[in-house]
Every structure is written in structure tokens, then in C-alpha cells.
Length: 139
Image (cartoon, rainbow, N blue to C red):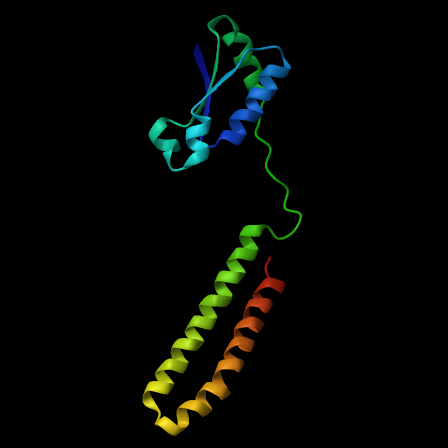
């Protein structure tokens, strides 16, 4: 067995496996399950390895030259972008809540209920507006 290529994730390795198998080459993918379980182990195990039998190595290297991993097209907001805005909303909300708690600690007891009523709802509204504005103007 000879090593043809290594990848940091199993998706790219299986794309190459499909490309080579489509041309009639026997392919073995090693350590793909290990990396799929914990991607951090990719460095420890040397990545996901694509191997071929010795006699098919020359043909595999020729096909490897014409292979490239496709990059995903950005058709809109990805789930990572949406997760970022959710995290940002909670960060702004937490900052407003921290200011509210400091104001409550400093204020006198009769003022505390009023501060809760006057600041809690607008804090959530402002956090939502900031997050919405960032989502709309994201480029």
C-alpha cells in the first residue's frame, strides 16, 4: 500500500476516494472514523490517509493531479453566521444585565423595582436591535 494523499477531514478524503474509485482504482481510507469522532485528533494521527495498492499508485497520482476539493458556494447566511449573531445577542444582553445589576447594587431599595421595570425590557430590545442591525449590514 502506498499513500496518495492526506487530509485534515474525512469529507475531502472520501471525495478523492470516489474520484479514484470512479476510474477503477482500489482505494483504502485510513483514520477517517477517528477524525470524524474528534477532529482534534487529525493532527495526532497524521490526518485522514488515502492509500492505494502499489501497482495502482502511478495511475492514482495522475488522477490526483486533476483532483481538487470543491469549495462551498456562499448562497446566504451559513449556520455559523447565525450562531455568531445569537452569541452576539447574548453578549450584548449580558453587558446590559451587568450594568443593571451594578445600578441595582448602588441604588436604594425603593428604586430597585423601578430600575428592574425600566431597564430590563429596554435592554433586551436594544440587544435585539443591535444584533438585527449587524445581521442586516453583514457583508
